[in-house]
Length: 257
Ligand code: NAD
Image (cartoon, rainbow, N blue to C red):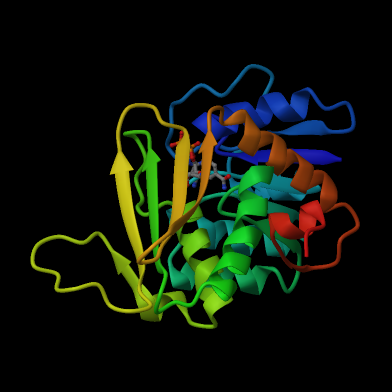
């Protein structure tokens, strides 16, 4: 398979390049940088002037860049008929609608977190949320990331919130309580709360807590090495081979129900 890496000079971009180069079944076609960027891509990466050229030369493009690029990337990949493994977080509802539109024409694997452990955790979150009544168990999601992260709460935290909402049969946007500050009043029954910590070089930590009056149940995940996301994304890229158009998640890639 011929693989392109969007944002090849980024933190994830560099790890993705290394993961593709280490896989004998894959060929690294090259990558793109942010337009106007003077960053140096990792050694051995052919640079393409823009996403359309990279898409035309690749079977799959792996994209961990920035939310602002998602709409133009969706159009370019759909136009080229190239599969898309999308890990960028912080997409607006409009940008996510464009991802869905592209998925009518190409295979898209879009995941807030490509770690296998988080993929399983999301399924567990939905099961727990369906089993523990929302009135009795308050769902709170706490995450911590490195100081460079630009969006909050993290894509993974939002995915956990969506999993809880799905288990409870509600829409996350109707019950989301994010970033409490000041005189907020008492906690609303059924709310799904989010708190985001930023500091140091934390790769990613998430805890989903169901707080009942007499007991707490918590699911936690810690990533120590971004390589876990790169390995998951490369696995997803391989999985797209011969896949019909559609919007897929890591749950599909791992074959989880
Ligand atoms: P980063 O800032 O180190 O890298 C992003 C790179 O994309 C930068 O080099 C930037 O110059 C480049 N870029 C920006 N616009 C571009 C464009 N239009 N075309 C090509 N390149 C462009 O950030 P990072 O830590 O590598 O994370 C990147 C994204 O991936 C973030 O949204 C982050 O939240 C997300 N992420 C997702 C997962 C996951 O498993 N889904 C894991 C880690 C990070």
